[in-house]
Image (cartoon, rainbow, N blue to C red; front, top):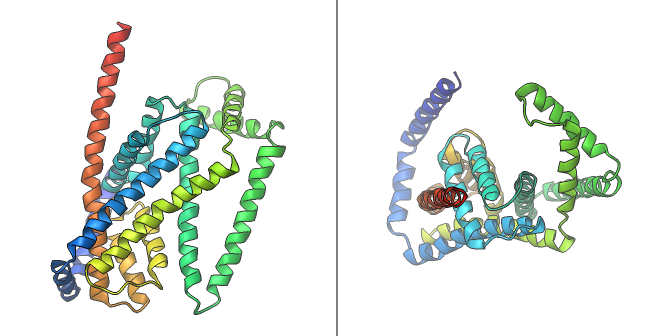
Length: 339
């Protein structure tokens, strides 16, 4: 039933997309005309910048894994990031599939379950926080109303609450047994529902908490990790900005960061793989709302998606193929050594 409903939803979205495109044929024709006169030199600049955003994401993972005692090469993690990006942008529910893929790749390279899961959670939190910060900065650039000041206060309150909670958990609860008790309750629930994981719930929770408290990045390392997370989004947003220049359209400085934040949030909605169609629409609508020319916006957004989506996805699947082949080769080598 789930697959049937997903198919019906996909067909319905396709019909809506077709109707929307059919009603905007003049705009698409104008956008196509702009893309035909593209400045390829700027495209050549945008491509390595987009690839640099993937490298920044891989560097973020490398830094956090290193905090847990696992040192991996940046090239290896870049391949994992490219492959995960392709999985996320190609499959329905791609975020979950890419998370499973990354988790297994970390485990294959020596991370235990706790370190692999901790790294993925930390990466997700830092990425979300840096994206929110980028969008908040875009709102601060819009000085037309008091919304920027209100958002700044709200972000400051959230930051204080988060820091205070982290301090209490780390300093006051670390030896109190409260985290282990909560974890044991969750494990018992899991054992009752799915019969996993096996073993004494309290002992499993205690070992997991002890392992988690070993991973304690220094404040300086957290700052560097946050800068890598921010660089990932900033470089990708720079690619969007260059797309405007490449099609000969004026750069929408006022609404670019806000529109980009909305588009990236739309990309993570489990509607279409990679937010296909949703991202383009949200970016275009947001930028047009700021008074930008509709045809030039559509042309720039299409070019940006060609670079960040249609070019990167095949490269990512190639990386997935290489990683899969190497993994099978390593498994055969280990089996041969044991036999």
